[in-house]
Length: 118
Image (cartoon, rainbow, N blue to C red; front, side, top):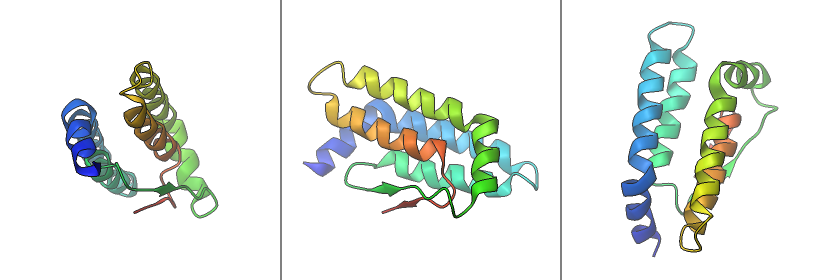
């Protein structure tokens, strides 16, 4: 069931989200200062492709300065986007599991530094 859910996720949401985060990571990596932020984008893009069955734990304390910079330079908007997508998925009963994945990714998009996802 997890594999089927990941395939459906990939088709309807994961591919587009991963492409967006990959392009954002490339833009961050253009500057030397933005490389750590670009690396986080690449990690999140990998998680967006197959998120079902993985847990995300955010730890703001590990890198508070990086999380604040991330939050100010686009993290809030990314989290709101996933929150909105999650609400759209939850309109239907069938889409609730996918909405939960969007909420998980919204949390990760808000504070990615110091997060563990496995």
